[in-house]
Amino acid sequence: MTEERLSFQAEVAKLLDIVVHSLYSDRRIFLRELISNASDACDKLRYEALTDPSLREGAGEFRITLRVDADAKTIEIADNGIGMTRDDLIDNLGTIARSGTESFVKQLQAAGKTGDANQIGQFGVGFYSSFMVAGHVEVYTRRAGDTQGWHWTSDGGGEFTIGEAEVSAPGTRIVLHLRDDAAEFLEPWRLKSTIKTYSDHIAIPVVLLGTEEQDGETKDTEETLNEASALWTRPRSEITDEQYTEFYRHTAHAFDEPWHTVHFKAEGAIEYTGLLFIPSQKPFDLFQPERKTHVKLYVNRVFITEEAPDVLPSYLRFMRGIVDSSDLPLNVSREMLQHNPVLRKIQNGLVKRILGDLKKRAENADEYATFWETFGAVLKEGVYEDQDRRMDVLELARFRSTTADGWVSLADYVARMKTGQEAIYYITGDDPEVLKRSPQLEGFRAKGVEVLLLTDPVDEFWINSVPTYQDKPLKSAASSAEGLDAVADAEDEADKTDEEKAPADQVEALAKALQESLGESVKEVRPSSRLKESPVCLVAEDGGMSLHLERMLKNAGQ
Ligand code: ADP
Ligand code: MG
Image (cartoon, rainbow, N blue to C red; front, side):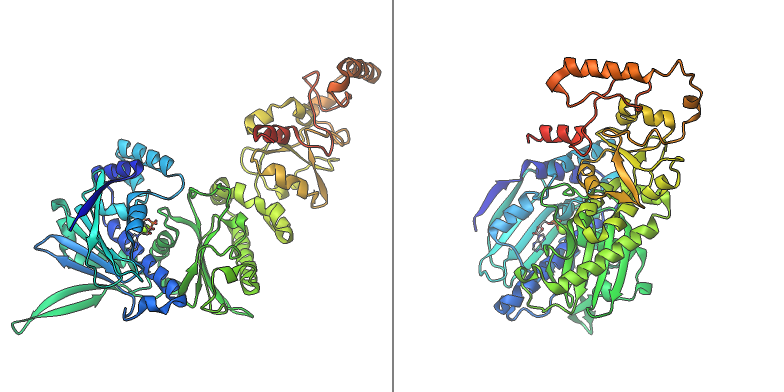
């Protein structure tokens, strides 16, 4: 049997080096990762077999099996899922396809250097976590529908081998040759408690295979270690926080804690169950142009797809989790899900639920701030993308401002508007500290009028789609100081003597002279009450493009 020797992608080699040489706080997670992959593989095959039942002929029920050989010091984890072709092996186990891999490895390396085991534990390394406990890993696999099987091996250095192998049925079997210091995992009780802790939520049975001596005969034994029912079908009262967290990590391929969990059953014209999470950390692909959502769609507990575009709108793409409905046909193809009316209704229900939950969580300002700082820039896209819920999303938005230290809602702003103030003022830019000092805001500062500082690129896009909030117009402080005169003077301004204020006719004359000498290069020179310390400032035309947007478009080469 010839085995071909291949090199890992450079990032994988680095990652393996870190995995092998840094102490993970909890090495048990290798088991969680391998079982999670086995379960995914079964989900994938179940879906493919909907359209091609021959893929599962004679395959029996889906299950994941564990076998320990104490003498050989090996653990085997096997599944009868989709399996892998030779190319799959190279792509999936030799490279990391996920976006942001390079920065991910860098962060991991930095954490590895400081030796902070807890910190490293936050980074998921999936299949490669096998090398935390095994000095040598073998994979036997056969893709459902293929007759040729494959054997993959590596000892976690820079290389792996691939060769043809006899594999009797479709699926994957992973053999871990444990290092001496990981011998504890040869103990069945250790495996059992680990599965209970990390993999109880897995919907497919995880079965420990063994043998037993009885009346001088050796008998095979089987013990199912997990509950083996889909977590979302269990009553909420019977699910622990840990189980929710582990389920989140499995479905989202994430490693943080969920910031928010929502589990509910909708019973009405359309029935469905949602188990959704808001992560506490930013996923890597949050700002990729595709703006993909990541909620998995199930029909009657059969995984269909993670790519259905209508499960959630893009502005909720930070959400993770699943939705399961029995009101979609089981043989629904991924194409049929485009513009599907049932899915539309489900989306509506989910969005309502999520925004409602966020509103409740916003009552705790400190907790909400952590969410807002992580995902606010994404949620704000909803203001211009979701016409129907624009105001709901706007209520959830928080802003920095010239007068507040923390986050401000529009409702807070309106509640403390100055006597005589008619509009909500904002200014857009890159840096809140720079904006605060902007000469364009001098007049606002002098009158003590609060100005919202909009510093996310997305702000330029939604702001023009919201003419008013609570009947107050939203106005750019950079293009209009109109209305400022009507605001009651702040103390220091009222104290100014007449001599300190420039006579109106002189200012008028100066503006005219400047206009003549600047000619075409400006649209207009006009006196303004906005300036207090600086003699002049640049402003954008009322209703025109803001200076910040102009700069942004110029940088983007438009
Ligand atoms: P992730 O699960 O986040 O994609 P992993 O490192 O855990 O990352 O796995 C990498 C890939 O290897 C998986 O996406 C899958 O394509 C493949 N894979 C791993 N284990 C199996 C398995 N038991 N059966 C089939 N494919 C697998
Ligand atoms: Mg995985």
